[in-house]
Length: 208
Image (cartoon, rainbow, N blue to C red; front, side, top):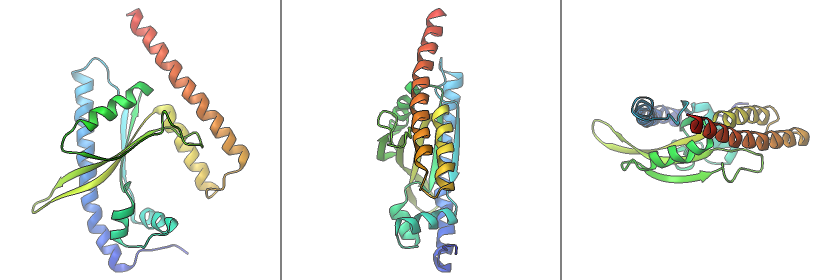
């Protein structure tokens, strides 16, 4: 049986998601500006493309239920920092920390948390750089600060993470040992490939 928000909490959540969507627009606009800068004013563009998403009410309630939290809007605001999320895809691993540092220099945003899974991958093999920013939202009558998660990774890391997510969903977090091992090996090979691609890119630059 599907888990649902109580009706009164669902109505509050719909209103709150409007504000989260405003914060998401704020962050994507910043990245669009950076894309224009890198594409037109800089020598290299360290961003391939940007994805973004706002968690659905169903996804929010499922995560709260899975983590054992109350099914309320206040609980979602307290425990979930990834309701609004942006994924920034970079050509090379060296671009990841560069983009992170550029975003951290924007003085009207505060870093809530920062996790480097690129240099410190999860046991599963997952690699990505995670930042959660406190993003200002200026409404007609007030200013609010909303958390927005930014994940920065290479295209190959993103491909691996998408596949691993599908596998976890299919097996309900009880992935067969042989499949988990295969994914770990693939993650290691992808990391090696990313490093080799940087070397090739540097050799090409020297040739020019």
